[in-house]
Length: 295
Image 1 (cartoon, rainbow, N blue to C red):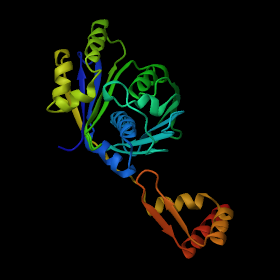
Image 2 (image 1 turned 90 degrees about the horizontal axis):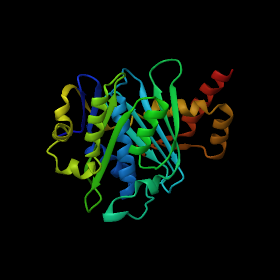
Image 3 (image 1 turned 90 degrees about the vertical axis):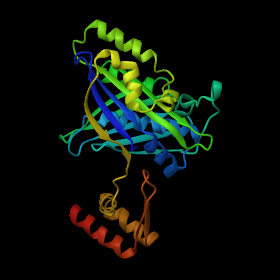
Image 4 (image 1 turned 180 degrees about the horizontal axis):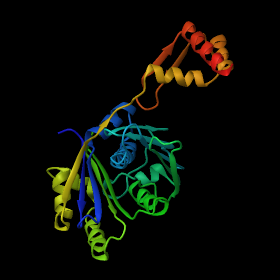
């Protein structure tokens, strides 16, 4: 079955919940970027939460997560769009760290501490940006902190990626549950109790028949009502035209220097590793367009 995100209301409409099966998406990122095992877990978790957040975005908006920690992974960027389509880029994709107890991948050590920013582009004049400190690098913990501090939205976040011995992704997914304003205390307590059972979500994803079965096991007693389903896939939306616009934005002077020194150009997309090649003639045409804009 293809990756997907289920959307629910529970607790008499006082809690909304998203549940993602992201195994294929995480494995596509692993293969695209030749990610190390721990980097696969970090990127997979970040893509999963970004995908669930993008379920609220309509038209051509987007969610961008920028995670800049002081760990070996360096910067991590994830962009999610309606559909739901996600793409990711890690600064040092082959970086890795030793596992923790029982072979558990140490995502926190790989990411480190630093800064987390979320950009919500809702097709308005200016995108909304929220920022918090990275406290653990474990992604789920830091996103829980982000929702509470930056968006004042108490949330339960559980994310997991489990790898096979050959480092392919065996299971990946997550749950995002958020309290609606005025949620009664009895439902707050019920959500906290349900969340306590998700500490080993990676292995639960593997043993469950589906993400739906996992959600029903932990939240079925809270009056689950399914209200939507969204596809989820790793997909980069780069095009020749977008790369050309980026080159034009460099300006006439920089394009002139590029033509004089190299006579051609190669531009690689960080998100899919596709390479776009431009001849001297093509660069000259882009330089003329840049000159026209500057004039």
